[in-house]
Length: 238
Ligand code: PXP
Image 1 (cartoon, rainbow, N blue to C red):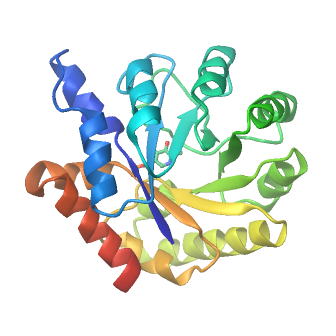
Image 2 (cartoon, helix red, strand yellow):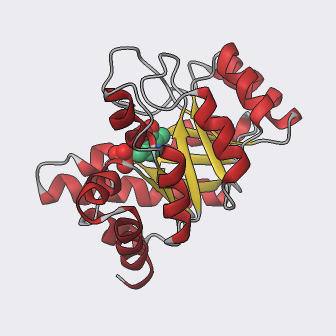
Image 3 (tube, rainbow, N blue to C red):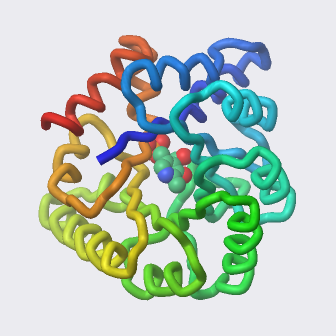
């Protein structure tokens, strides 16, 4: 399982003072040095953390791969086509949310998402759709030509009992298997941390996890490289 690191919250801290530090680009380079397989940023319409300049510099300096999380809206699609990340992960975006709150409804937005995938494909950008672990959403994602799905793990992360967690993990496991059978790549993310990551090692169909908040929170205490290395080792060795 590969590890992609989301550095949005380094930019959140930088923007709190409207100055230059800490630098999300430096954080991305440190993450790569510690063994990250990719860097993730979410260029939001309101630019609350990562900005366009960050994305363009990251594109030039990182040596792994860039995953640009984005809403399927014209302004951001244009930027993506110009920047050409290796992967664009389409997420639903609401102005007032603190973070992405759930997966896309692919079925209800099929025309817009299909067009978005076609535009990004024309620019040689692979596309992932961030969805709930639901079979009908996976089928719709495959039907409109997505290359990957990213399974929303936030519900699992927030379960309050072991029974609920077990059921949600089963849903994730079945979804990952179903997606693989359809030829989709399988990523997973949201709310993953140093404790709950362990159970995901057993789901062989998951190609990559995308983790932000837990790693940046630890990095404030121990440094970016140490925080990434600890997660990388948990993924590799348990
Ligand atoms: N995947 C997606 C699609 C997200 O929107 C986010 C949050 O930016 C993440 C993964 C990472 O979530 P977390 O910050 O909780 O690790």
